Every structure is written in C-alpha cells, then in structure tokens.
Amino acid sequence: MTKLISEVWGFRVDGLTSLDQDDHKDIRELLLGRKVAKIADDHMELDNGTVVKIVANEGCGGCSSGWYSLDDLNECDNVITAVEFGGEERSTGDEDWEVENVYRVFVVAEDKRINLYAVSGDDGNGYYGTGYELLVRAK
Image 1 (cartoon, rainbow, N blue to C red):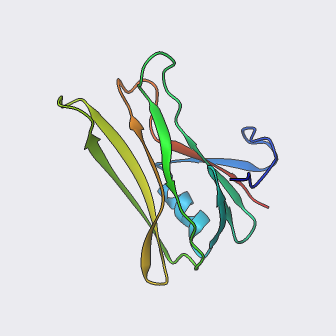
Image 2 (cartoon, rainbow, N blue to C red):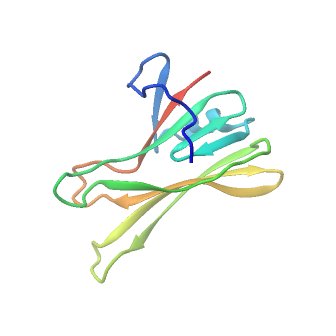
Image 3 (cartoon, rainbow, N blue to C red):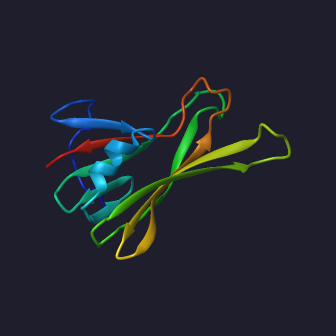
C-alpha cells in the first residue's frame, strides 16, 4: 500500500490534533457527515481532505505489557450517519489474567453497520498504557 501523506507526524505540529480511544465525542464529530475516501496502512483520508493516522499504543520494551496493533481499517464510501464504540476482552490463555482488549469503532452509512477500525492488545500490568491514539491533520 502507498502512504497517503508524506508530512512528519510531529505532536501538535501544523494543526495536528491528538485524540485517544476515550474521546468518543470528538471522534464522533470528526466522522459524522464524512466519507472515508482512501485508506492505506494506518491512515485514512476523509472526503474533506482530513487525514487521520491510527497509532496503536507501544508498550514495554521488555515484555508484552501495553502493546497494541491495528487489526482492521476499512473504507466507507457513503456518508457516515452514526458512530458507535465497542470493545471486548478475548481470552489468550488458560489463566484469568491472559486477556486481550479490543477497541472497535463502527460507523453506519446507507443503513449498513461497518467496522471502521479495530485495535487490539494486552494491557499487561497496566503501567504501559492501552488502546490507541488518532493523529488528525485537517487539510
């Protein structure tokens, strides 16, 4: 896949906005009334030229705690009329503590519910963070 943009994604550089998995209101406002025109790697470009990069949390350098990955990223070529947030825990082993967290964002367009993106990983001991960040650059 090709990259959508070539700019450096520096924090709060040139109008860059950062959102995380808990910023439901802001994510909803970002997506409502828009279409996802293009996707590539970990980027999506909305029909108004806004580019969104999904950055999965990077955890501990020596263990699996806090490591997340982007599992799904899908286009939506119709106007988004609703945004829903979901999540789940999946067992990864026999012990109670062996779980993987999944964050999902669904959109509704043309009366179809679409899994726009999903990020999953392991909080581990909880010290190294969770989930994802959206870096948003308006055109």
